[in-house]
Length: 463
Image (cartoon, rainbow, N blue to C red; front, top):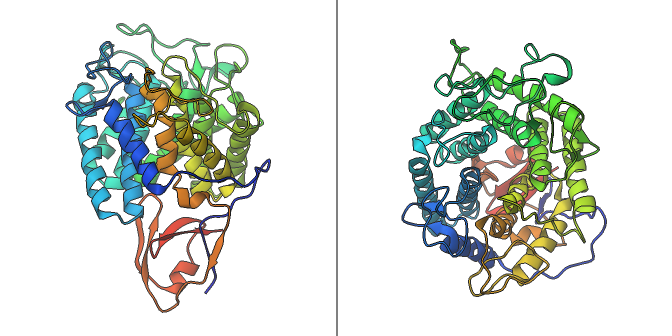
């Protein structure tokens, strides 16, 4: 039987010297629990925007932004996934309950996920806000298998794509059959005005922050919807076929990749002229995620190349000393948490473990410089967070998100080559917790597709 590479190897892009890790697996769990202790309103089970808020009332009274709540829900699901991977029964129970409560709290807060309700306090009025939730709900369905999660994910995707008869907008899709030439293709960012929307016009903003999340959502839905669906009828369907999701994912990706990306750098968007270049970590992140998902589905190497270029641009151009940039505009501090979600795909699902040394460097700095009293970071990993500092949940989310997604054991500089026991049979899991084999034979382990798995409670990489 072949050797399984446990621990995961590191190869440097720009070569970092060996680093000491001062944090532990227990610290990684503590970082997430401290984040929740400070920012989660446990009465409503939604998140506050600032550390000194007594409660999360609504958009104007202490609640974090609606689209950022989706990222925090992702973190809850990721905590459960990790507990499952580590076969930690206590944490499996704890974080499943927590994820369920947060889902219920978010649903109650935001109009019971009625995506046709466009009130500007607790409702839905920008396309990418909805699409972030589409992605989070689809991933939650992957993990928990709860049918409502899939139903809401598909309803929200179709709401964005087709528009709403109730609201009166014409949807996010810039259909090339309707918008000719340079004005066609991709996704519009929002509808205007909010109350009585008008049809989109040539030159309206098509941004990276709706295009690449749309690809991610479509790919994720392709992976989870039934194979045998028939095509829907009517002008406002609430779900689509497997083939349709993949077709649209590729179409939107091709437009956005051609229009908004140059050598791994992602533009913020485009109006009527050329792409508008402003670097944002979350645009890089969702481009990486979209590329990784299409690579996994199609096997085409161009997607993996694109993902690597985007990650390299982040660490070599946007970062200083490989420390991720912090943006402090409205809600922008959350970008690091989004980057953690999709760099994880590149590192683990696509076998690009060379980025783990960079992640380790960021976590080590952030952990060392956190406010140890409250257990939170202000997001600027190279600077100390003081105990009396007012901290945003957005900026504070980056450190626990990275620590959840990148277990300390995966950040070691050494690789152990372990010969597996040919006589023993063990379950094999994917990193998202899905069971591959209940009792894998050596031949079945040898035949696994490339990726990262859990086998005999150890993580290994199939190249």
